Image (cartoon, rainbow, N blue to C red; front, side, top):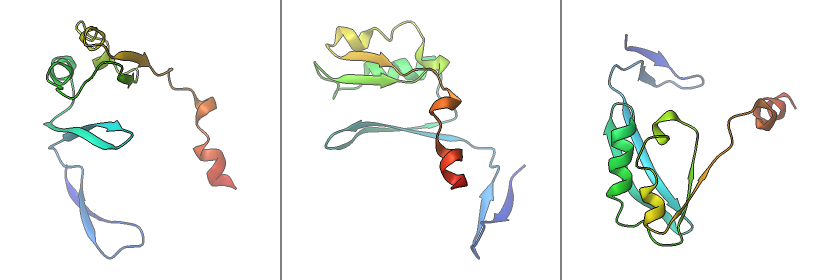
Length: 106
């Protein structure tokens, strides 16, 4: 259920817990953001494949890093490689690599 909450240290109120979700997805290149995409709801396999297949800026020798979300493990992801780009999956999350809580304690 949506409600208004005051942000810590602020006099403004913001709406949290909204029932409508939006996903923003962009590609990052050395010279800026490319191919912005907004989706109402969560990303799923068919939307991800559609996103890959209609990326006109995907070029030969591009390198794509993908995390281990189940959406990314659908049939058809290999179309990235047929366009000459390389796909690398990031390693699974490990708390050993999360140094955030350690840095906050100091």
